[in-house]
Image (tube, rainbow, N blue to C red; front, side, top):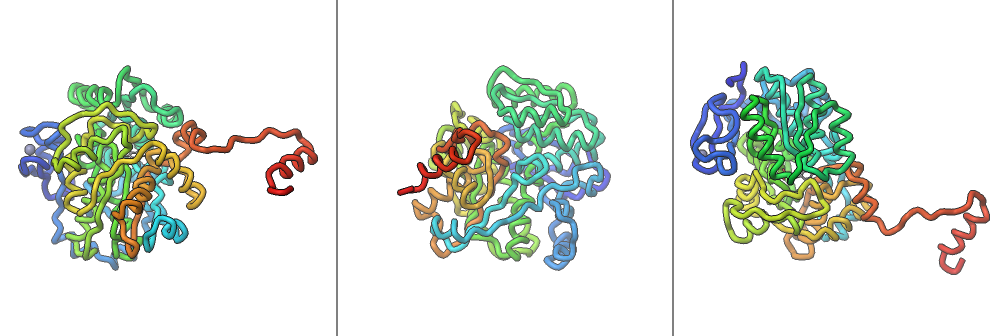
Length: 423
Ligand SMILES: *Cc1c(COP(=O)(O)O)cnc(C)c1O
Ligand SMILES: [Zn+2]
């Protein structure tokens, strides 16, 4: 499906390296198949470098990730889509930096995207590609965020949207996708089973597939967070970037973003990237520790961080390559550390994150204890999803529950007297 004005130069297979012209394949390498045959998108970098400079970027008004159109796989900014995806704030948190033990700490809050998660970066590009290809139906399997995100953009674009969810997705995420008008199939089974069923359905029905790692263009949307970090730090990237990992698409995309900017001469050096998994769902950590380039064993995933509860990471090749090439690492944190990170982010940074959204910060806390981030270094932590996505776990994470009192002043005074020491 060659699009009218294809910006990309070619695609290459992450495993065998085979090269494909744009439009020759849409999803994965036919020789390696889905799983190993994920594709990387390449652009005509030399030509783009002449157009896309620090100055042209600085003069752009576009406060969304479409400001990087030259290195996105769509011919034009799709008018029918939600206008405000990406360009999320990067907060500097000096007090938190001191307590974590690094020189400067920044939090990028991607919970502020239109559907309240990082997935909007990928879904907007996925729906734009579907529109360009003249597709009428888009489909995805998701633990929730990818689904609610794609259903938002599909609704804006007038596409039919068919979603496969595993049972047990948090209610807020289900509410979102029903509200955006998606057709929702609750699969009796795990995320991994829902994913396989969705893939088969796309093949059979000819639906456009917005599935992580199968569709190479989604990572191109995810890379824009890295581009924004570079711009927001005046093209002087941090030493370390830390993010939570489920399938591995975000971390692979981030690394691609930094590499693209370096190839364009927009940044001089690259950060180390660190991926953080929940200990109960950490196949990438195991593969990293074995020195493997791929995940060979599926694990039975179990964590309260539903968005990263993945037993078989689909973008494993890119994720492992990102941490290895950059000199970073994959590490695991316990669910308790995730709950603690949620409380700290809320109370010390004013950022309310869902469990997977706070997992990167939990990882940074552990990294500082293990000396993986230096006292003189600058770190960026990505918050990937908003806390309102999963209020049940948020309530579980807090120690204090509301205190019931009678509706009069003496009752309040008795309460205050009990709380103030010596009062
Ligand atoms: C999807 C998701 C992740 C993990 O992204 P992967 O690309 O699957 O590694 C992390 N946090 C949140 C909130 C997510 O929705
Ligand atoms: Zn291949």
